[in-house]
Length: 291
Image (cartoon, rainbow, N blue to C red; front, side, top):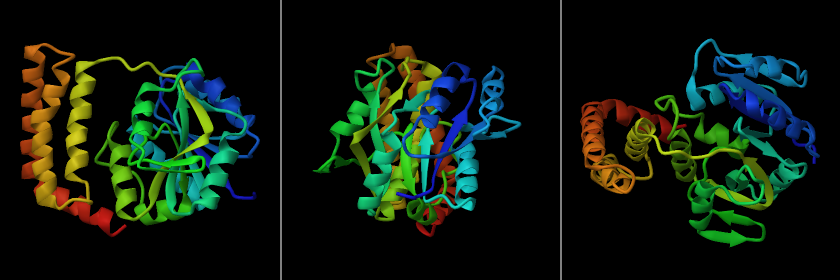
């Protein structure tokens, strides 16, 4: 196959993964062009990246977050004739046949806008726990390809056709939630999301409970619901209010009464803020519909 593949990576203080990440791409059986957007790292990430002449490095003067930084790389890749764009987390790496398998799956299944590989944890043996959840929610299976409603953006092979129809990541999100919002938009525009069982990556992360992070993720979960153009605006607000009530109940297995109550009031306050911003929410939704 002679399809042009660009890999887009966003880095922020990821020095401990840089060599493994970039080396794995250099050892890919399928040739790729690599663009890295560094989000103003304060460690040795830029120094390490600079030694790889094959990498096009873009240094941001501020931390743009995941979506906005990826948008820079995606636009650059499209301008340079990319047929497919592979988003890869800084804490992940591929195997020699990963890219070729994903490209083959995209080429033979044009109705899929996003195809992700199997995500292994850092031991390269067990599946990443969150990925396991996404995989188990599969709705269909054909050959090596399973259809899912969502898979996180640690490793997304995206078609040019999908990006040109759906657009870029929504800049309302800074970090967390932008991939879920994008999947909602992909489904609205009648593309499928899949997992290629013949392809795999390693996602070297350990998920730790953090209250501040859980608050932010919960707020962005509410925002993704409000922006979900597969539902009417009124239904989205109803569903979002249910999440204001339901998310604290979910986190009660991790936190005591005080923190759960604190979470509820933070989410309720966030919801009221979004009610007052209903016109802005509607404008973003309309933009997503007409992309």
